[in-house]
Structure formats: C-alpha cells, structure tokens
Length: 109
Image 1 (tube, rainbow, N blue to C red):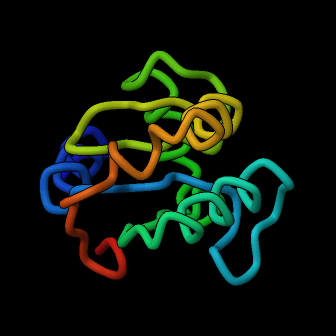
Image 2 (image 1 turned 180 degrees about the vertical axis):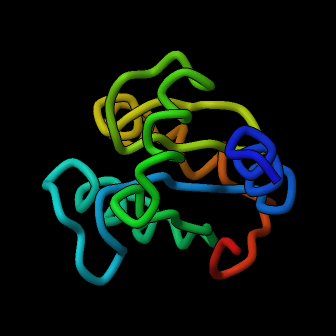
C-alpha cells in the first residue's frame, strides 16, 4: 500500500482523524495539544496519527490536503483545518455539532 492509499484508508475507516505532532497524552506542540483539548471537551471519539512516526506520510499528507501545517483535523474524510479553525468552530459552538454522530476507532492502523 503506498502512502496516499494509506491516508485514504485511515480517512475511510475512521469518521474523525487528527493528524498531529505527538499523541493525545503527549502532544509535541501547543497547537496539537490545544486541538486535542477541544476535541476532548466535545467528548469526541477520534483516531490520531502521530506524524513524527511516519516522515513519508507527514510529507505526503501536506500534498494530499493542500494544507502545509499540523495538526490537521478530518471529519468524514473531509479536511476541517488546523488548530485556529478548530478553535473558531469550538468558540462558535459548531465543533460539537460537526462531531455529533461521528464514530471512530481508538487508533489508526
């Protein structure tokens, strides 16, 4: 499976995916940590991918998404955006609505 197929598989098998620096328990940047806090505040079920564990995926995802930075939040296979967009959606009360009904596996293969 090539890296683009791997990304597509992750997005198709998980309703909510956060590509982040580090893990939810040990985020390795403030933006990733803040995004995790907001998802948790919404009681979201989401899968995460630590981009530091797969440099090829980290680079390919930038091209796939046309989004140069991390974290990247996807819901139902669609890029929602990074930390600033997630904060904005949360503050408007729209993040929880976006995530409502989304089911996800606890970890990405």
